[in-house]
Image 1 (cartoon, each protein chain N blue to C red):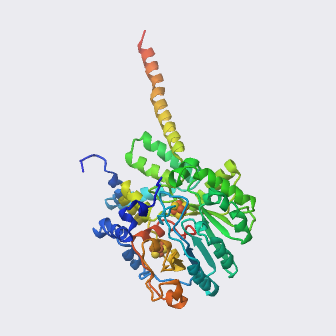
Image 2 (image 1 turned 45 degrees about the vertical axis):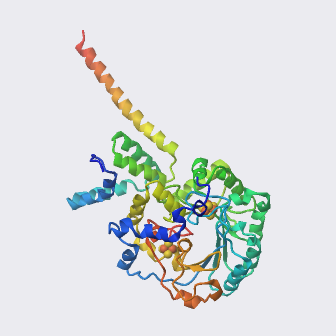
Image 3 (image 1 turned 90 degrees about the vertical axis):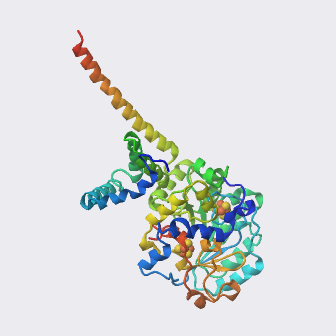
Length: 351
Length: 111
Ligand code: SF4
Ligand code: SF4
């Protein structure tokens, strides 16, 4: 398990240009593997264009109580970037006026932003249909000041989406840190106690599964069945859906791939699993991602690679949905991660 | 790279066998694909059987492929190792059970 972010370690890959250089070079520059751009051009999807905006994804900061091995955000306790109340206010203006039906709060651990609860309360008033918080679960048990979070989520009918790499302790702790599994189980039980995740409950609790290593996720429905069975039998836990997400070769996962000499094989596997029918529904086509400092991106991954939207409107303070929607989405080789197999998005498979 | 009989990168080229015999290669891959679909046995169970058999036939390509497949299907390392033991037990048993033939022959030939 990692103990510090790449940034704190002064690792080369903390710099987004270095990551892009690796992604665009080697097996792609040699022509051994086709560029993503050429692949989607073959099926008439280049340039990739947005459809109607449905989801606003707001990253309220890179601070996290965990330092997971695969984290594409390079989040951790040492990351200090967090969204200010002023930027949140600019986001609220947009939330009030947008036609997007889903608000998706992410991080780091979004709950660690000191204005998190204020923001949720304000945003909850804005008439968004699906209000998602991406919780890493352990934060709920990290320290007393977060113990009330399940009640707080319930009060605002927040849709909780939580990461759970596996239903066994060993795999979960290896990827996310010692003790993470037990804390996650406890947090899930607490959410269940409030009614979250129960079969007929409106309090939505979904889990996110992503592989703990250099391989692609298996069939989402089969994984969901296995997770449901194991968590129910072992811990009496209920949840609604399991979203299987592919790890994108960015930040700490890229570092891991290179260090473990899996990078090339992994890229081959992604390209081999390329599924043209996933392209039309990749999440950047209906999402805008907003960073802690208010910049706009096509997705959270482009945010981490510092690839700001190709539009005149680049910052939340200048937000204009019509202008923004008339843009070309910025793509690179990491996008193969969104189109491998059944495809992958923050809501699981797309094809 | 040293010259060896097995090159892990060759696994990626497996599909190319159709280039020298389109019909038979395609038939094989169609059959192969069908075999591993969910059926009376789950894809997960089939993956574990494949892993055990890979060890018995000692195919390094298949061992790589079905270790990865098992990971993709959320199969744990304990389950994988148990499957290998099942293969080893059958393989060992199959060797040993021929001991009966040896004993028969020995007895027949001996006074
Ligand atoms: S993967 Fe999630 S929980 Fe883990 S370090 Fe990154 S943001 Fe935190
Ligand atoms: S990585 Fe981002 S830009 Fe690329 S396909 Fe996925 S969502 Fe779209």
